[in-house]
Length: 90
Image 1 (spheres, rainbow, N blue to C red):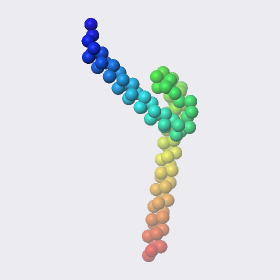
Image 2 (image 1 turned 180 degrees about the horizontal axis):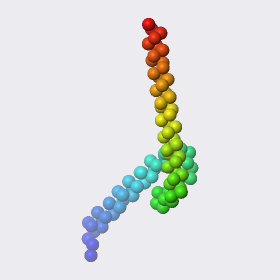
Image 3 (image 1 turned 135 degrees about the horizontal axis):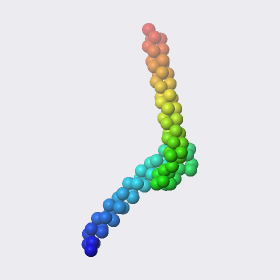
């Protein structure tokens, strides 16, 4: 027979695991909202399908690549502005 304290410990651990799971899900959901993926759901986490995961990852990778290019372009613009200022002060 399992005593009450053991059941409480199991229940608390399960509760903590569930909270962590849903916190992670909500973080991923925010990313999917940012990427305008409107049909993302718990099913994508609980029962991932290879085609679906490939689709989601391709969108995420494309977004990261886009942001990297934008950041590189911004760095180049800043560098050009610094050089222009430096030479115009001379």
